Image 1 (tube, protein in one colour):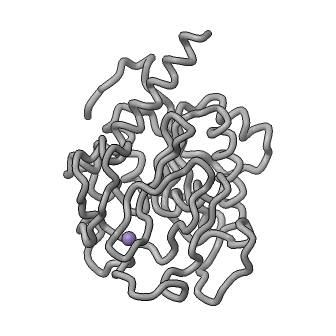
Image 2: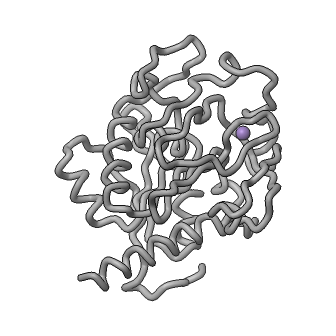
Length: 249
Ligand code: MN
């Protein structure tokens, strides 16, 4: 385990979880990746009280939005289409509130898969409810290969934050999604696409660290340094933000 930061300097990273009936659950790959990066992972319980959510975002140094089920399309002004899967309105509501509070405070956010979609929607963007019924000539985005297999290739925009982290403009990643971001929220820009034009990554021009990833780097982070580097740079951004706050008093 890398102890990258002193104990008092370790940032507290809130991790959102799925709600499966009455069970709150999240794949431990997410918290393990944060631990390796030198952060303190904290899985956020379900709650709707806006005052509590505000207080939680005061304490958190960063927010990791994890993968999960589909998102309610009425959040971005569309009626549900037949290709929409099962949704969790309570998760959508809590994550939207957390995202907006973190964005207001310019605290770092890393959104993975569903997490990048809800991040874009909360900030004013939209998404494809079901890529396969809304787009043609697509690659396979719900791979049948094992979870740690990198199945499709990204073209990464040179000079983007993602490019700085990954260090190259082509990179293969895994893919487990039938939804994807469509129009970017104001100040968010696409930074990686697959050959079929599906947006696989974006970042904010208006915030210190807001990164959305359509793939699942947590599945490969234990053995792949580039995947872990995404979590490392997120946690480093949280440390920097925390130190800025302390200096300003
Ligand atoms: Mn994909």
